[in-house]
Length: 81
Image (cartoon, helix red, strand yellow):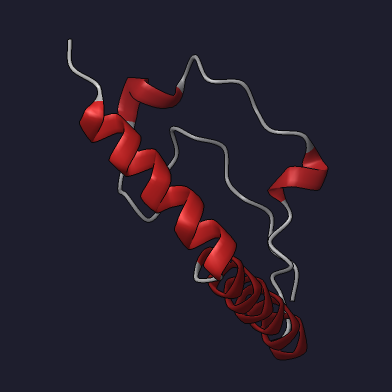
């Protein structure tokens, strides 16, 4: 089912916006479509996010990065103004 967003200033989920929405530009039609994502697209997106988080966790917890962070903190604590 395809729905088209109503222009600002009309009754919507936030009630009447009154004069707040009168000076705002309308979005292009391709941005107003509310097609949404299917369950498969959500699953693929979630899988991508989990994979990226796992890789970043592996990098951040690696010995080289841990040593570099520890060295940076120790050096920052040695510096006196």
